[in-house]
Length: 442
Ligand code: FES
Ligand code: FE
Image (tube, rainbow, N blue to C red):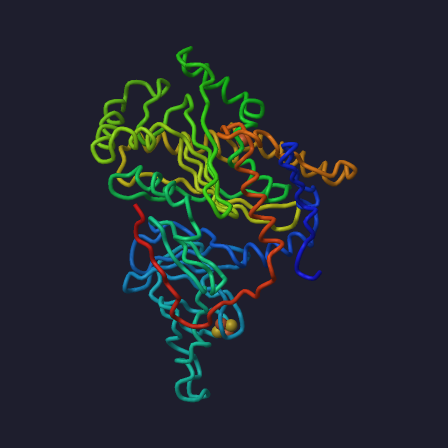
């Protein structure tokens, strides 16, 4: 491969209102290899939420962009991210999923690293020249770029990346809306949902903000809603718009008939807790004004930050990352985000919602998985059908929730990355990460 894929992956005819994607984009190993070097090695990728490191010394280990990383808060409170690969011979340094550590000890030969990544102790030091441990190549390798926006931490493996705030473009406004659910701060609650799907990762990216499929794929959930509302459900009641947020990010924002734990009471919840939820709404109005409070509390949004970070802000607030293992196999992680200190009853409802719709055994995800796996299978066994259609609403000035603008935004950016000049990724070897923090953009 010369590093670029030919343009035939995308077929766009604006006059005819046609936008198609080649099914090779979902099956070719060359495409996946290009995605690794041109997308996952170069884009900002979601690492974790600040609340997941509650105190100095907290750490967790997580796979991001094909690397195993340590995400931690050092003894002085500084957040850092390292490759979880010992500079001595490459053994895994932190082997637990999460914990608290002043130091990390590699279990192979016993090298010890501080929470700042610097080598603290090398067994047999007298066999090395003086100053050996201080050399940066013997420290934990820091990721080249680590930044946060509103407590969402991202990494980028391209040392020349643009600042995160620029990369986020219009998506930053939506991170503001999500962070502003809380009067204090947001926190990740509960554990991690992890599951895999026998389908290409981009199928779930599309599905994460696809408003077109809900009425047919998720008919069971809407029946359930109707029944549990005892006939009080107004219409099917899902309507809204899609927006291009720049740099490949897009969102759908819409009203829907379900309750939202942030501050939108729902009849099936019963009267218990209604006063508390209404009080939270009143405080949101006081702080943000009626229009923004209404948007925060009552509007739903499915946001995808290119390439693979979905935030699904519906009857619960789900953060989701999606990574390819092979062209036909993806791995998914999901977390529930919530306002810190929210009412216990609301929290219980939120967590039940987190499981009920988007959980791997919920009303939605098994149906979505079935659809995505069907699609993937047909790419292999119906080769003469070579294209996917993503044209809906292409000629609409104001694309709606059920149009496909958001997928076209994703695919257009994807195509640009895969046709951009090749570039090497770079990981800075050294104990001090290049930390560029953006505390708040609101
Ligand atoms: Fe870590 Fe040798 S590989 S100390
Ligand atoms: Fe779905």
